[in-house]
Figure 1 (cartoon, helix red, strand yellow):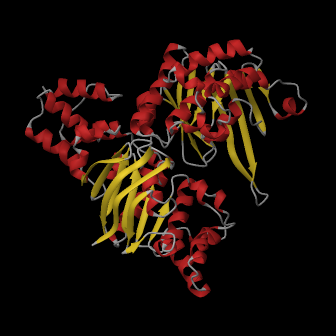
Figure 2 (cartoon, rainbow over the protein chains, first blue to last red):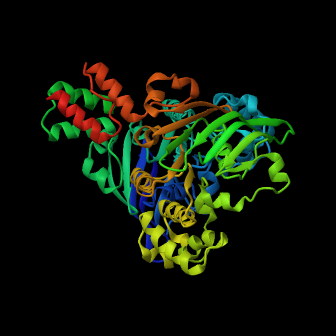
Figure 3 (cartoon, rainbow over the protein chains, first blue to last red):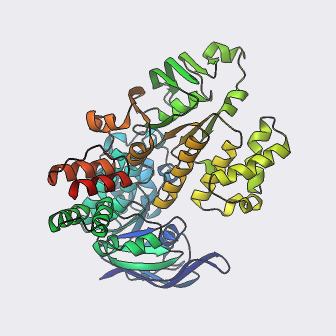
Length: 268
Length: 287
């Protein structure tokens, strides 16, 4: 079942300067989809359209069988949550608890249930001991975990990670990746927007955007080995694959070395 | 030595009125020429606080910082015995989100703002702007454009040009490449590398990207819980030290080299520092 359908979606901030053009994209329930593309390719605009922060100039977006519109936006947001790039830009509460509560208040979740959910999901991301702390004293990785708890508490079945690991230190990044894997294994549909090719290996399918258009949609494996597509969109090939391509070009790799490098690059 | 730290401590006042150690007993020397340093460590380990001491934006709680012969300590700053303006010009600091600091209507005006502030006349400042815009890899036509319609990478370049126009001896950049796509990141790192080699300037980069450390740095500083726990060669750091304890990662290139050497039972003559070196060595070994 397609949990998200984008049909002929276009968007422009200024007339005749399209940021996204004719996007047709179906995302399956439980799928992990990566959106790759250079800076300015339209990746973040696409995520803002999906959560209704922006309204398409043309086309329609259907989330969990609901046609996204001004009238349905609150319903749609019960199904889809987003974690943004900069952990500092997504805090509204005085304490971590307030922050997780914020989304629930918007959904008008009853008080008892709200308290329960906050405890449950703060535990889930290992932030329960910080519930009464001020968010701005946390590290970047901790802030992103709180943001994730806030979305989990809303029990959405789709989570978008919009370059959510790109500003974190190695430890914070690893931890967020672990949560992505875990959530996906539990059936949550994951959409990651990233420049990190190592991150995209984890996903089922990859969409490559270039100048606001879809350049390629295919399985992660097929996209990651497609040098032409990657080069066209300012992306780098995974290092073991680069080495493999070089050895093939120079005609010095035997079968054993080749298959080893291939296995290595696609290891999750 | 251009910058000398001697037993420097610094504390922050938290919102709970408790003091938090941000720098503990830091001793360190940095030359005015020829250094390419990366500064790494977990979020909150003290990296940004450390570089803010390097151009006297912060004053040590105890200990001394000496910048181009000027001694920065509580007493000197309090009694206004030291002039801080020349230091800010000599040590250029590019903040983590330099794009937030662009505010003029044209890029030219943004770039000449800094030098004019330090007493450079308008004509000279404009000459410098024409030069530095090329150094950061953009052409002169950008100067008349507005800074607001630029991509993230372009905005970073423009703000770096603004600092370069002040002609600092030392250039410090706080996470300059985070959030850029791979091509943008490499292009910007090449800009820093060119400034370093052609103008012989010392570059200090704060980063979470271990690949930058491995492929570019001559020297790496590691901060951990307000302490400077490592100051030395990047290869030695990644091969000999227990970096897991400092929550660092193995650079992609080194990780691949280690895997290849173990699994394919190969030995590369010297640890390759970049892809080209890896290719050349692999070719020699596999043939």
